[in-house]
Image (cartoon, rainbow, N blue to C red):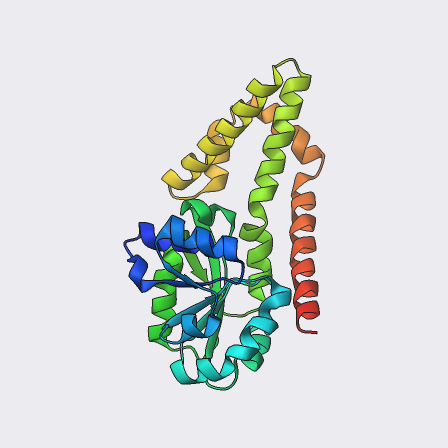
Length: 261
């Protein structure tokens, strides 16, 4: 996700000189410098020393080990810390950063790599309007940004948009599989499913976002689409999707509790 953010910011017109990457792995550090032209260092303290915004893009289990040694430096520079570490709550981040560091969370999804992502963001009251606006400008480099008023809603965001691409991929995968079973050549069936997924997304984005209306426009009375949708409804697809979303949301809360120790 750190690479996605770097690429998005550069596409949005930011200069490489405005960005600095701290990366402990030598190969990844060299790749960041080579691919994006940014300053890349192994020294976390150097990276945060003059930063207005510090993005924490590490595995959740590594967040404490990265932040705790930086607390003195953060107390001096007073940046906004923006965490994209899944499940790590603001309270834990604040405790590791030390008093006085403004902390917020953001949950981008995989399409952020293409600048077509969706990010759910949460900032507690200590984050001021100016810092919130600056964070929004950074996150817009990845795609659309939606602010939530309660931190626990980020678990729902994760279930919907964070995990959501996998749901669509699974449906397209199953459609391709069924097409092949019905006689299509398997590669052609897969390419048709991918193109259908892409085209449907473009249609959904091109209008007012009324998904029910778009579905109705594709569904002729007594036609093939109606036959397929009736079969899905008979299998209670709606209840299955709701159950899947609940499962993902609850799992996010379990992971958050585990990250908090």
